[in-house]
Length: 182
Ligand SMILES: C[S@@+](CC[C@H](N)C(=O)[O-])C[C@H]1O[C@@H](n2cnc3c(N)ncnc32)[C@H](O)[C@@H]1O
Image: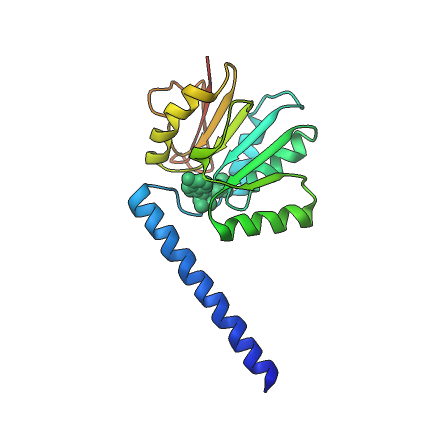
C-alpha cells in the first residue's frame, strides 16, 4: 500500500514536470522563435563530423545542445579539444548531463541562454536551431566570433552569409551548411 502511494506521488511529480516543460517550450517557441527539443540524427552527426577540419586543441561550442549528441561525437574525433554545450531548458540539460556522466565524454555542459554567452574564444560552432534564431545569431556571430571560426548549421541557413560548403544529409531536403568567418 505504502509503495503504491509512493509510486503515485512520483508519477504525479513527473507528470507535473512534463506539463511545465511543454508549457515553457511552447511559450518560447511561439513567442520568442526558439527551437524545439529535437535531436540531430546520428547518421547526420557522423556526416557533419567527417566534414569538419579542425585542430585537435580547439574550442567547440554546441548552441542549444539538447542531449548534446553532436558534442559527444565531436569528443571522439577531437579528444584534446574543449567542448562546451549550452542548453537553456532543464529537461534536455539534465539528460545531457546524465549521458555525459555515463559515457565519460568530458563535456562542459552549461545551462545558459545562448544569446547571453561569450563566443569570442570559439573555433567551431554547431547549431540546429530555427530560422528566427539564425537571424538573431547573425549579429552576435559578426560581433563576437574571431576570423577563421567555423559555423556548422543543420537545416537553417545563416542569413547574408555565403556557405563555403553545403552537404546533403540522408535525404535531399536535409542540408548541412558550413561557414567560415573572414
Ligand atoms: C533542435 S534542438 C537541437 C539539439 C541538439 N543541438 C541536436 O542537434 O541534437 C534545439 C535545442 O536548442 C535549445 N534552445 C532553444 N533556444 C535556446 C536558447 N535561447 N538558449 C539555449 N538553448 C536553446 C532547445 O531547448 C533545444 O534543446
